[in-house]
Image (cartoon, rainbow, N blue to C red; front, top):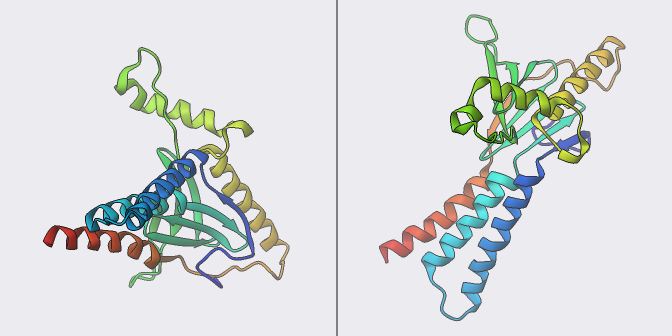
Length: 218
């Protein structure tokens, strides 16, 4: 695997519109209030830290998370963590509360590759409560299965759903297998799963928390 981050070889990046809208509202509102406090002439360290934390959480939790399909595999960007799964290690795709990707982990001391999975924060199932069904009805396995099946049906107006994202990954995996069978030179048949921390995200959250802590102490 040549790189851990999505590159120019990325074929498609999937996000859900609702999360993006919520995230950008938090970014504009949080950082906007922090900036307003700075230019108002009476800046409060605690207020600035709290407002900046809202903006940072908007970025980390809602704007940055994504699922990118590339020529070499799937890039799962979750809050604070990034996972890169080469096609050769991807085993299956699941849909429950979120999109789940099952893959082979690193070779252990016994020479075996344990089964692992990662959940995509960016691709979630939207469960709507049926009238008269109550909360338990909305969360029942039968209800969740109905929602997953509905989201798997093509519907461009709904944007990215768990079903459509799973279908995109499965189609790309099948295309990769066909390219391997055709011995295409640009297709990699090697690579290990890479799981790394997002240092920028950590700083974006820790710095506002530090400001809040300083304000409390002072």
